[in-house]
Length: 288
Image (tube, rainbow, N blue to C red; front, side):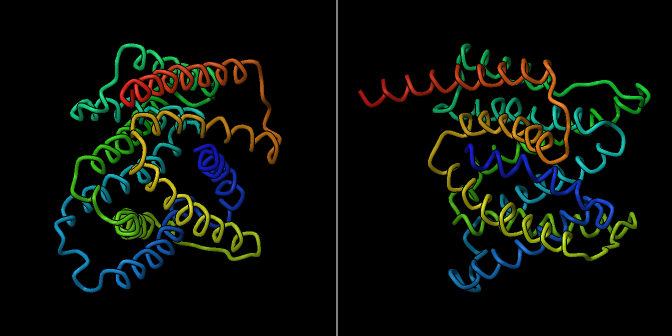
């Protein structure tokens, strides 16, 4: 999870570095298209023409739509609010996941675990919320869009856990997501006039990194983890992603790290520690 969080954290820096040549929405569409080709070919080779006749189509499409909506909302939010506000509200996803998994008896959270989530999310707010020159109304609309993106992400984890797609092969699960995202994001980019691409060496390398490392390698590992560990534990650990994002921003873009960030990081780590210690204790009790 630490490896995945570092990969997901640096993707914001990578996207920003070529934003003048390719809009973020188009970058996402391109990388998802490449991943869709990879995973689609994998599914067809391993399962053949009957791949989607196993009862996973409906829940798979729901998963793909939620995944696509998340990224569409993120793109819209970034236009209206700051990147700091956007990342804070996207990482409200653990709250929505925790609410959703209350329907799963084995993953219900107790009061201490809820406290850990609250502390971790408070740390995200302290570390990343800042001031900007945007109007309050514009910030509020963007914040609400980012919060909705966090809800879409959190609920997509619940859809994966509860739907038939949760029993599908990892390649098929990822294909549902990246395939739907390719179609929806390309359509959105075309309608809004964001399809222009200026190729350069840096652009090509960045798009290859986003496609091969983020949309193929990291997604394979993520879905494997979801099938072997508790969703509530994994989704909380993803709160480390924005911490890595700021660290990479400081190292590669010279973004400052102030006392607020340091304090917020400690709160995030404290929340993660509280929930993970409690879950480990529960697991030991169940084994005993």
